Image (tube, rainbow, N blue to C red; front, side, top):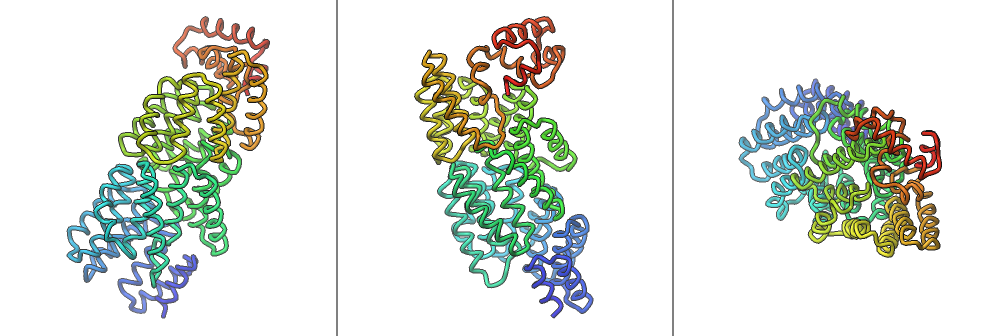
Length: 515
């Protein structure tokens, strides 16, 4: 009776009561089941190290394959989710798979190993592990496979398969007669991730808000955190900087309370992105420092996102060249680990930051291979930027607006205005500026180089603009010289040309103009 009460408390998210009842059940003779639940609920209250010690001891006391599998899965989840120790989790998984004779139970452990592979090697390797298992998977195995499989397939650009896997797994989770450690809503989280990769931002937001509200109603801090993750995920494209900052910060706090170190890394990366895109470089740097303080291995599922956070933080500091270098690294990493949608986003960002000709061929080739309207729109935007085609840039703005990617739409409209001004068509340039302003107003304070006033973009060369952005961010001539590998005298002369072209005489005026 105590054990049954502990399970009821656990599934009603009262982890403190669940642990107390589970430990009382153990004292009354509940054995393996009581000890397992006590360790799991300790982890859910942020005591991952203590839970790992209990589960390691429990693994040495199992009586059969079912207990061996359940103990191994619980331990795997604690090692990567609570402690960020993916390599230790892989070792536990491999030892359990070698020791379990029952094929079905071995498959359950293998499905959890795929999650560790996603974190330690990336989407391509995780999907390679899962594909042989997915066809015949059902029940509890399919629930967890759906989370990892949908995420991995989405990042590979196989969006239809990703959505199908998420839907199958969700149906399997809802049909379970007994709850599983991974609730069915985890598959809805995965579905949101795939919808974002497809550019179906409104659908993703609607689902995330519904499930976040359900988490509030049911008292699930975990559900709230994961769907806040979904809501903050889109900030690079939608420019929803204020709500994304709030949502990512709240999710990171909830995950801290739950002791979810492995996932908190990802949320802090999204928080840094939002802060950087709001122009708050100091706060973004603090979020990046908090990631370093976690002291865990970089999860491969969010590697490109983390590099993008570093890149946009550099941009917020006026370091455009450094930002592009970090995004080039994100592109390389994405191709290496199979995060192809992450690579496409990084290539697009490089184009947005003034170097479309460097990336246009690569991004166009990727867009031919990946599914979804978003990657096609990214490629079309970069092609239009490279060709300085104002009509194509107007079309790109319309496409992004239809996708609800307000920041990308605002930037493309501003790009079109610059191209029209350079072509001498003032009327169309003014219309583009008005459109860009209306779209940017929906972004709640997003600050990117593409949204800078049109005069600075039309009149300044790329080199002058980069120097001006560094000066506007508060860097001294000596700092700028070191950043750009120029002499201090060259920097001073370049800034004088900038002042003359823009009709200003002080850095404070320059900062106001460029923002």
